[in-house]
Image (cartoon, rainbow, N blue to C red):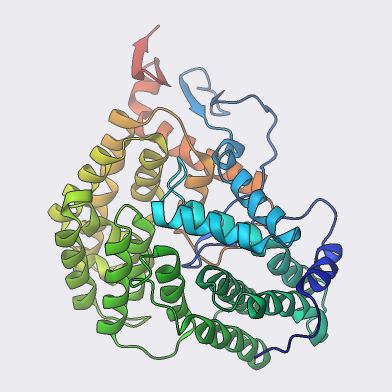
Length: 444
């Protein structure tokens, strides 16, 4: 255990002071499962609220009109919560922070974009410490052990002062997991250095020690249960049954959150702890348990990232079941963020397996074709950040150097796909226009 060498506030002030001006938040911070949470405003040429009318830069620019959501709008309800967590941490108001996290967790409060409020508060509260580690590492201070851990030491000191608070204990554990991902992320997957690997493992070990006494189910806390599931990413061993059971308990605590199901599917891949039969089994088990919430949707959610990451998983998926799940998800969550997520997944995320076996490619193509009806029947506006992440197969370790350029790539991908989808109409001289009222195709 790290030693308590001074008041938490003093050490955290040193950490805050070390951050670059204007850079209090990280463009690529991750959630419990390592999933990126884009929480920095993205530069745009038009700062008006609401979708902007963006058209393809081509000779047919007047034939296709699609509103594009300002990427910063997706941060509208995330940033205040993260800022609140950060403010309370900087003011040393840990009891107030714990009360807010507990209340949000107990009530299962989510933002309009589906992110748990408890997670966003916790992200903000540990952001100074996590961002300072990444900043120092980017400046080449990896050899200065004290500089790299002083922020974590401050959180550990705070944790010692609140040793009986499970939410603050979990917050510190999540900070260790974040730092572990930073050490892991600064090396290529196949060439991580021994030293970086040891530091990554040490932080995961400390997180595991902090979380070991806590039981998310007994505490009725998806926040804590999700943190314990996040530990699997740093373990070298684990049985599929154990991991599946822990995720099942988490999903039962918070069935509305599809991120838990997606993470379960990833962990059931052979590259992690499972197998293809285990993936299929857990997809069906999860769908059966959450039918009242998602219909067949949970089957789709469990396979969602697994299919994008592993071509062989396509050979196992039940296509009719998967497609029923797509429709059930959309029936329950018809908002434009969900439409963009599903459409970009089908249109962009599954672009792989050029040399795959015919049966795998055929199944992938069946799913990809769903982008047609998703866009024609349900799309009203483009969410560029979602399309940009889809192009990277929702890579949890993605590092975003420029959110503005990243979002622009997503915008171009979406417009290019839509233009191709309506190529016949455009070539025939028709005007294709998306709006809040739906799709309209007209002739001049």
